[in-house]
Image (tube, rainbow, N blue to C red; front, side):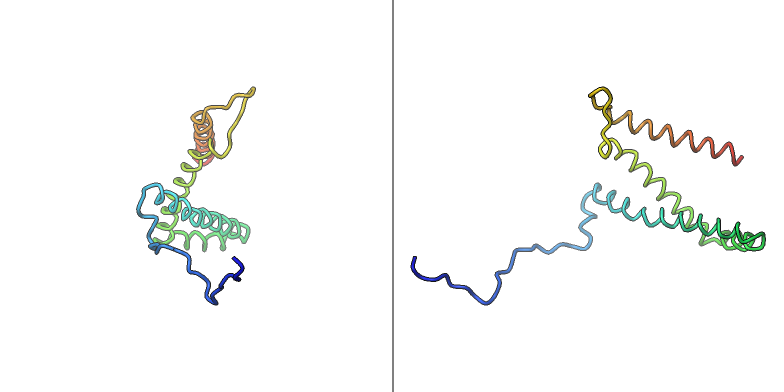
Length: 136
């Protein structure tokens, strides 16, 4: 016990198992998680597209016509369709996650998660109906 401990000049190597780049393809829940994260990019595209639309409208009639011409190109239409699907997926996954992210209590009792999700879907349907009524 009187000996000083021996140290090596090399740090011991930790065990780190090799992880595949595609680790997330092993389970459906991982794939759903990654798709939800990727959907954020398409949500951002939707915001950029709307900002471009606002800029075109504020730029006058010619600017708006140029924007409509650009927005009517097939690749932009496909991109917006894919973005719509991903935004809908993002919204649905968030509405299903909301009861865990936001526990609501009324008179000391927790509101069932189904009620929270259902109220989110009802609000979504009401806002969609209002927008459809205004547009059509």
